[in-house]
Image (cartoon, rainbow, N blue to C red; front, side, top):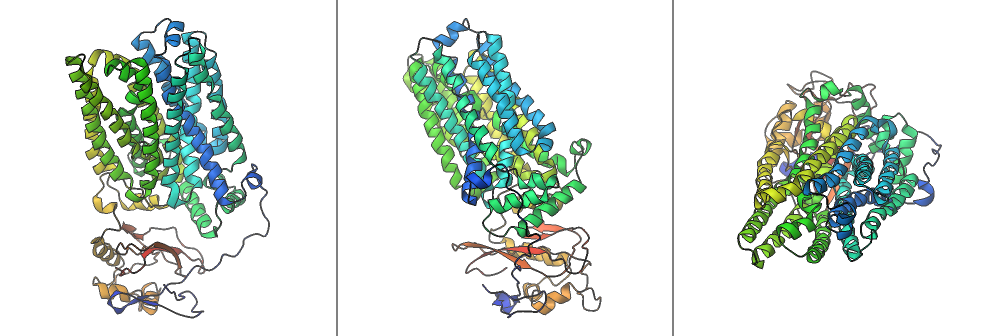
Length: 636
């Protein structure tokens, strides 16, 4: 691929022939001019302990992962504790309703912590939020471990929940905002994979402690959580703040320093893009009234809340929190066998979650959610039938085996997409100004519905039997059309690009063409709409000729005599060239138009974006355009 300069005519001109004999003249971005010779002071120890971008990204991944691992451990530990003889004897054999309350009160604490993060998150920043809420969680763990009564246990779980709720509202946002845009999906999937590793560790620790006849049977599994706390506190103290948050607080020098630490390549273009996005968000900051007024901000926040609510209504914590209980009381397995099956399932669950790393950024969010929901509906249908037939045929081991297989199938299906996407999505879909609020509201919904499901499960199993599982089979089936019509695809889009998408797509209902921009057959539609919008010819040859150097200069000229008929002025053109899929590797090219442009109205179809921009000041401001190309493909 070769390029030619458009801005000042300097340099050796080269071009590449395109379809129809036309050619596109491109110009690579010039090396940035340093704005300062001084280096901002190193902060938080990241320069001392993490000397390369790879190491720094690894440190952030481990810290965020430890936060989510502790979350997973808490999900798995109590289900293994409440079936133990020592726990039941010490707390005088609590009823199913009491067992539901002492388990679910943790989720109420998480709900409160997520709401607290909503109000103080932007003030404290991502790092300090994690440090403060981890200390709160440590206090709750100490109370649980030392509990001498059920009331003390409940208060310990509520306090620990407050800490965990704040952490789970913050860690994914911090991780996504420091990750490269091409790896943000993978970043959160890794978090959720280690979340399941925490779940698996809890299953094996409670299994190992189950033969004990002393209080150590349940105190040790609770107290060991403090090891996670130490790891989180030490790592977060040494890691940098999100550059996006620093820019939102007008700490530009620190933000640029962090971006230089996180990236081995030039960061000027990305820094400027984020800075402009932050300024635009601050200029149009949505108030709480606007947030719930039904506009764009409402839609974006609501989508995150919807997915995290659906995650809990899928029934994952019917099985996650209570799997030993379900296997023992519903399926009919002996207590020790139920513990072993739970531990084995946790290992399988972890590998399924880890495997999803490979496809989260290839397949996209919507297909994983719809396919996963359909599979989970089938899984709960199988569990319900197995439990129902087992109740009708006592002594027959086959129905219990069938139910156990479908429980495994549920966890595998859930891990493929529903485990990670609902946590990733709020950080992807919300604007910078609403990202903390949106993530906190979505997390609050997750914990609220988590509490409702966990509270209802012990009495539901006791009183409804197999019918309790059928409720979740129906709910998961309903999720499929809701996701198809409402949920926007975010795969492959930078955080700053989502603003452009929502500006151009006002309807709450989405269409298939909005999500699969590289599919064959899209190109003609995309290019027709693009070029009609700027008032030049509809046929493909004329479109391509418009990108010849001289014709393109004419297109953006201020001179009425040379400007094409119908082309509005002033204009800003952002063009993504969408080419036929080929097996060759994908290249990201940065091109410099070298001229002031502003486009009205903004239109985005497939890879093409016409953006309504701010008024351009000065004649030497340049705007970059991204082209996504495939080697060996025909252009448009």
